[in-house]
Length: 287
Image 1 (cartoon, rainbow, N blue to C red):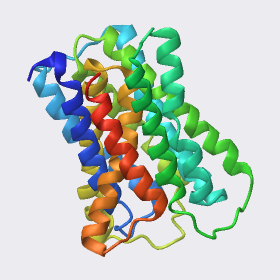
Image 2: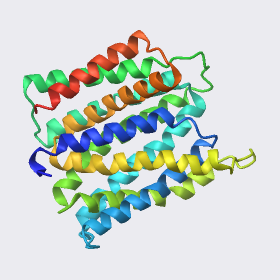
Image 3: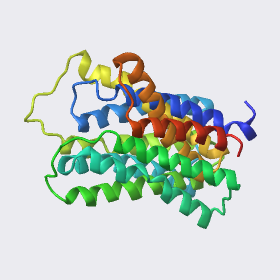
Image 4: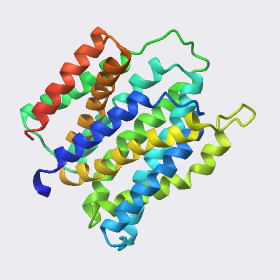
C-alpha cells in the first residue's frame, strides 16, 4: 500500500470495525468494567501481529516508549472514567459531551503540530462535528441524574480522548513504526485491568456463558482492530482530520446495521448525522 495516500484507507477500516462494534456492543450480557478487561485482552492478539510485522524489533527509546504508553493510558483511562460517568448520569447527557472530544485534537494539532487544512477541509471537519452531535443526541432517554459527578468524569473522558489523538500523532512522529506505538497502547490497556477489576461489583451475578465473556471478546476484537488501524491513519494523515473523521462516521455504519437487522427507523437527528458524515468523508478524502 502506498503510504503517502493510505491514511484514508486505514481510517475507513477503523470506521468499519468501530461501526460494526458499535452496532453489537450492547448485545453481550456482561458488566461494563469486565467488558474493559475483555477489550484489553483482545488488544493482545493485535499487538502480537504488530510485533511480528516489525520482526520483534520493538522501539525501546525512552521518548517513544513514554509517548506511546501515554496514548494507551489516555485512551484506557478515559474508558474507565466513562464507566464512572455513566454511573452518575444518563448516556444522553454524558455522550454528547464526550463526542466532541476531537475538537481538543483539532486545537492542539493546529497550535503545536502546525497542521493546516484547506477551506474545504475545514468544512469537512465541521460536518464531522455536526454528525457527532446528531448521533449523540439521537439516543435521548428519560434516565435521571443520580449525581452531578457525571460532569467531572465526563470532562475527564473529554479531555483524555481529545489529548490522546494528539499524543498519538506525536508518538508516530517520534517512533520509527506505527506498530511500536500500538504495542505500548496494548500494554497500557492491560496494565489497567486491576483497576477495572477493583471497580467491578462482584456481589452481582456475572454471566459466564457464551453471551457473556466469549461474545464480548468477539465484539471487542473489532474495537481493538479499529484502534490498530487508527494508529496507521494518524501516522500517515493529519490528526486534526483523522480524529473527527473516524469518530463521526462509525455511527453511520452502526445505524445502517441496526436499520438492516432490527428495522430501526433513523430519527431526524440520525438522518442529518448520516448525511453530514458521508459528506465529511467525501470532502476530507480530498485532503
